[in-house]
Image (cartoon, rainbow, N blue to C red):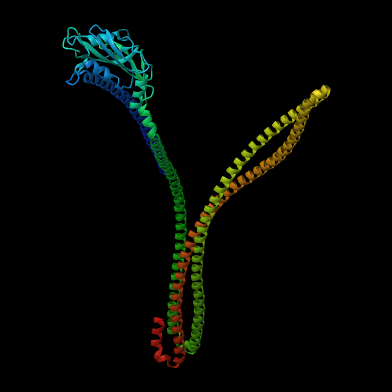
Length: 629
């Protein structure tokens, strides 16, 4: 028993530690994995969005820079094409003046003809505008265009040069190309230069907005504002002349917004799968906990079974001792019967010897009495046979009754076994009833607590209704005072009197409603108190029922033990009855032998009576027969 208890305690501790450790070790990695996956996804998405925004800004910067270079190249190429002399037209100046009118550009386009000193001989401005003086509008650009090719820092496109500089306080693209002389005498006609100026103004920026699908593209002279992308505009000397700026477009965020529904669905599915996985692990832990509890219960049942087995062993030893005593008594009865049979046979032999001796001693005197003696012997033999038949009948009755007793005991044993099974079922049903009664008692206690809470709430409602009634009473008094003041005011207080009457009616209605609330609250409180009393009585009855069920279960368990003892005792009695039946059977066999012997004695007596006349000749044979008997 002590060893079983120690094994039970050790098994419970090991299972508890294994269950707790496994539950913690399984839940922590799963939760950590889910959190790590969510954090990783957030970091990756944020990094991708930031990278896409940065790449989009750099791409737009490169695109705008390339576009401005292309615009400057086209401007220089157009000017070089216009000013290139050919055989059909010797006058490059006239060609330039004729063609510049038909040129189109996104922004304002100005045309100039100047000499090496920068003096303007001819100018052309957009329709409705006046061309400003080139030296005043852009001195830096003019200097860049008039540099000698050896000293120039600008770009050369064909026979034209291009540059970027401020023009009339706005950035502009400049292109200059030499014009062919008007006559053969180059001294009389000094060199002239054709200049095109394409201003980067608001129409040009609007055209670029449309071209690049941008919003808010504009020029700023100072540093760009935060949240804006920009490209720097520098002249040929490397001086910054401003910035072309545009708002930072969150291309990555826009793409993320486009795929946000899909990401949301994936996130929801991932969260659902994670929750489902955590639930599965939780259920596995709960199943392990239930297994642990079942193992503890099985260990307790094993201990209880070991205790019961010990009690059954002791009872079996007691029954074995009873059976051993019954066996000893049966052996004693059998030995006594054998002794009595041997004594009876010894007595018969002694009687025969005495008769032979008497015949030998008084042969002459007993010849006359021989017939009488033979008759007496025959009568005695018949009486003995009758007695033996009666004893055999009684032995048969005893044997039949022993067999009937054994069968009855077997039937009783079967009934006791059925009774034991029924008692076990009754005990199981009683235990289930006790558990159900215990659950009902717990529910009754919960209902009683709920009713107590209901009484508290009803009391709070009653207090609130009392406060409302007091407020309604005060409101009624105020309405009455207001009506009195309105009456004093006369016609000017008519509207106030109407309001006072309405307030008074509302106060009366509130008072009536408060009274109804009081009545209903009293009814609810009465019903709740009745429910509390009823639940209390029910709780006491259920407690008594639980105790009665526990006592009934214990009683049924005792009855089962007693029935088990009766069954074992009945088996011992059945075995003893069987032994007794066997002993009676042996006695009956012995009585049959005695009956045969008595029948032989009767035949001998008849022979003696019939042959009495031949006693002398048959005496020796008769003596031998008597001695043999």
